[in-house]
Image: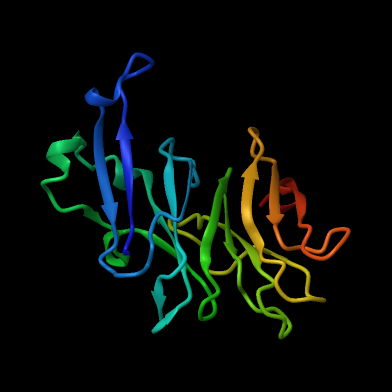
Length: 212
């Protein structure tokens, strides 16, 4: 249950699966469930797309807080894609902190950080469905992070969206979707109260207010 991510390399509009090449990326940790959520986008403006991968049961500081791993585009460019049958015969490309990856960690045990992740322009939105807020369980949060001009990700979020704190279990961040122009983000809370208990709710955010 460590999970993995597969990058498929196509051959244009006329590609077919037998011709595609593949790269398998994994973590060396059991039960992290890497690949629960995935998003891509050019975070640092170098013309290469990063890949953000959620591992909601990642072991962080001896607790399963969850995390999001961000693989820089310049690192992905060094991978050698192979046909599926050949790639299956080699070890996966490992994602490790010392290998130049960026990691965003959850804050609490079983908070399930990384259950949702979205890249929108230069922002990464990381959902922690079961995070406790103001002593209310499973409220959920979405934290927004930005790249550091010196490279990598800034350690502190630039903004935090918090679910309903008046009752437990809204689980903000179960689903997220960004508009094509990257300026709007829709965040679902499938157990939010809305107009009645557990009928669900969604939040539409204008990301332009988070511009540097």
